[in-house]
Length: 197
Image 1 (cartoon, rainbow, N blue to C red):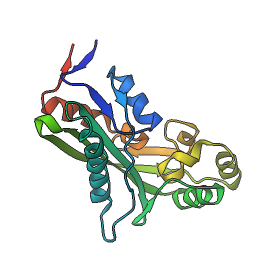
Image 2: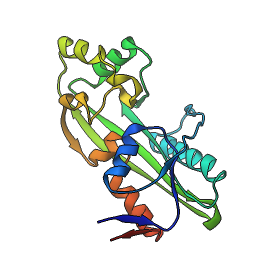
Image 3: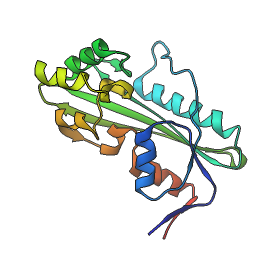
């Protein structure tokens, strides 16, 4: 079983999780990270924020490689209308986990598939709800003392030790990791660039 694409694919992200997810379904691709300003615009909704950033990331690389398909993505964690980015230190990681402890939050991922030569630009946004267990101070110390929280939106990894905190997910699990695989492959299929063999 293989999945083949009509054009070369570039992942415009350095995320190890996105790389692993794409490889898990047999896709071959190059990685060319897209360095865009991820600042929030006042009044921008979470959906519009990830939509805009995924488009910007894809466009930056697609303009340099017009014959390739480029996949750009952006994932955020939202609770109480507050967007949680990646914690920079132990204090921030702990504050994020305290907000999430025992509560439900939302994970949004925007993804864009672009190819300049074919004027292809398809963007989608996927939303998942995640319910956390109540995290004890001892569990919080254990987690923030490790390296896992510090390059993850919301300060946890659903596919790593952070899975211990997750009681339930409503929606796409791969979206919570960083890329909604089903919707991404469906997007490639709709623009007729993917074949399943």
